[in-house]
Image (tube, rainbow, N blue to C red; front, side, top):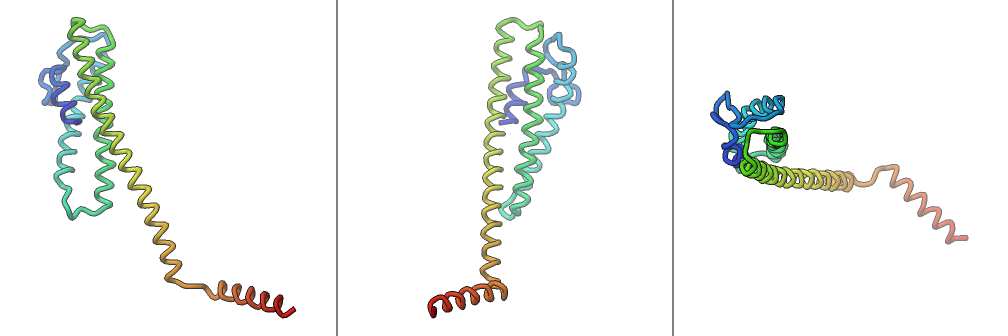
Length: 173
């Protein structure tokens, strides 16, 4: 899960991870990625808190449109976590002060976290596409029902009568 990715798998990457001023536990030659990793860690933590609040607001009486909005929001929260993981990966790709063993371990943790987040995003995108497809099917069925309930228009009736008269004339000849 995204919570596991940020709060468990990346915990060893930061000191003061759950504060407003986390710091990487290692040095990297990519100073911009290091700065971004700190900023994105704070942002990801905030996203997770907001996400939890949104999920707690879901109830059996939630409207379908509210659920669809939550689904879209879920994808956005995961994208923030995904961005953090890609940035952490960039810090590890630059020369670091980590031993080869620790570097391998950290890369494996980031890779596992990315796999979890990517799988979750893929699942949510599939659900979102399925909902959109089902909504289109319902809208089409509703339009057809509306047409059937409305009955034939006077113009359609007149056109059919003209065809019947034409057929009669053809039979009479």
